[in-house]
Length: 253
Image (cartoon, rainbow, N blue to C red; front, side, top):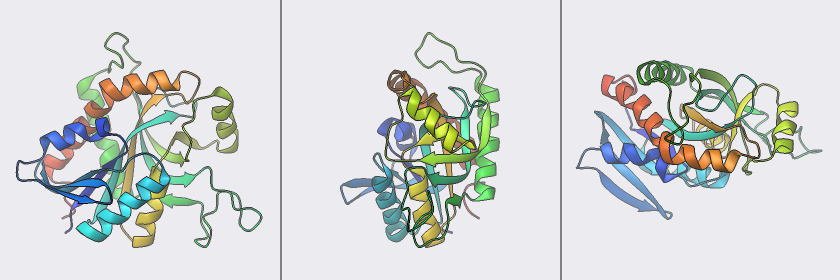
């Protein structure tokens, strides 16, 4: 089987994964991106920083699929909570993803991807189930995280559902409320997942997206996001993935 690709939009989201790769890992520089190829906790992987936004994520996904023969793609990082049941510190595993800023009306329906005839892209059910279970086990074992070294968050939960993607950092109450009204089923909002999902769909590659909720996509989003990125993001990603990779369940065999 091919390698597992792990992508993140910000360095902090994948830093601990890069540090844990076997010493023999190699770095391939393509299109201003570093692709780290090697073994991570016993599983062949390629890890890359996609950078922020839909175009960046789509370009990175295309490269790992075409250049490194990956068999599965995982995107991990932070997101802003939308749904009332989703709180800061929770984990959201995508069942499907859509682009909330896609609007080619009147040629196509709102949110429909032109010429593909679909709004949502479904994540791989088996891979997503493993991430969901792994996140629940990690949270049970680690207890309640601290976002800033002083404040303890409420007991985190793990959710599975719709993730909305768009090329905007949602950080105002009005913007968040508009999204909640238009997309009542969306659990969270981020800037890369659905673009990566579209690329994987077109290539026929299974994918999954796992997001940690850093903020509520409101006026406090920038402050909350920054604190979470520095203190929690890397802990979640490595903590959830390490047991799964060591067990071999993500090896694709």
